Length: 452
Image 1: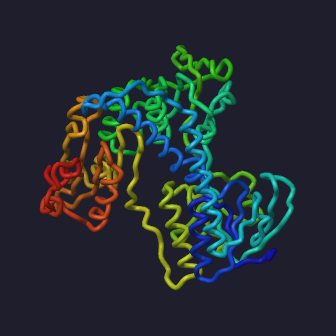
Image 2: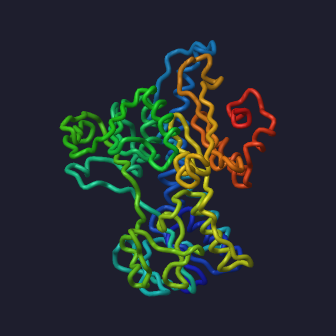
Image 3: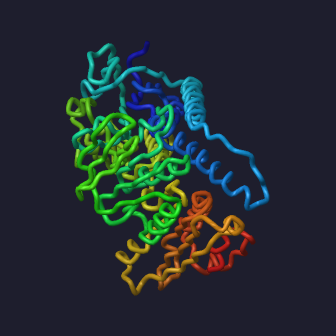
């Protein structure tokens, strides 16, 4: 095997794969080092399998609505183990596809765990932090190893799951305690509830989804509580007792909750352990690799993209960072990623999607007198006959003087699909007048954005 390359990439996740294939397309000799399966968090244990479980939960909701549309169904048997098996099979299929994509691109895949042994060399071992079995060098090196879930240090933590574990379950227990307030906690709480599980969500602070627009977070909470999820604010888990399937969760107020499983969705951090960053002289700040606008680290020929840099930790961002690096380093055009306007979604039930400034962020930047908010809150037509389910919330945040749309936000069905298109308009500097001039597509949920 050739041991010297133009580019060596650590990590075959979204950012690393994007960079490796793009660099190879410019004629660079590229190797990518990965000790796990190819595809990274998104494909193997994140966005993709999670969204498939969201669809599984939604299918149960649709069956529950069937009588409202005149459909009389015989008894329906729920086979969650079969759903989980099918999700894993799809992940296996995608993993195989990504292996083929690398081969087609001419990228050399080196199986093993990589770590720096010097400023331009990567050692490879069969286990993370183990004895080296190989070493490769590169004119440029890219770190794209992503992040990992955080486990709080409490008694009994070994009895709990993190998000990675959820896709390896053979079945789900009748009741689960979900710990956390972020998008991963909310999404899994809704998935589990949709699959028929009794869910209690424990939240340390006073609200869900910190960092998102507060009004939207409240709308999501309303829908979650309506579905039967119990949300406990101002609480932490102090200990987990018992055995798998029969656990007792001790809470900070002295009460406890019995359950069959505990999901710790308390955040993620860049995965810096056993990378040998000090061997290459790479600067680490506040637990992440510090990079400039070109994704360059403190060492001029070493770069980093994706969650390991802790900038905007989303799959499309990591992909664009990887491609921008390759375009600049090996292609004919230099470009930087714009992290200021990134659409994001929470695949909870109800779904949340957003682009631009929240109402709170807009007021902080322009002042309360410089911001105008338009909103519409209603029950969508799809919920008219069942007469149940959460209400939609659509919201435009404007700069008062120019009427420019600073933020476009939605909670409701197909929110992510709708906001993806709205992001184009917001990115082009659209004003409320531009939205108003756009003819509505009726009847639809999204027409409220051009009629409110």
